[in-house]
Length: 109
Image (tube, rainbow, N blue to C red; front, side, top):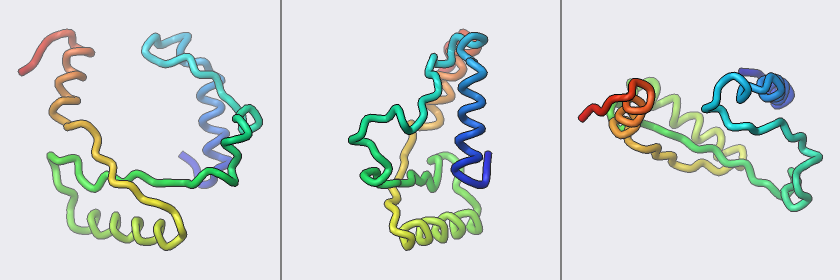
């Protein structure tokens, strides 16, 4: 998406300002807010950046080089002083059932 925070902000701001909720009713109406609109209790100096890491989806195990790369990234992030959290999203099977039901309008067991 981008190689810096500035470029990510530009991409996300541009997407938000295109008002996608006007075209797709599934998109939440959430206009762009700049840092200046955040409450003072959420200043950058008080926020600790954390990274959620999903090492496997519980269905397909990553190849060994991917597992090794994830370990290396986790070690580098933690060595830089950031927190890493194990992220366990809902089961893929459950998500797939919801997706099929909502997008195709039929129930799959």
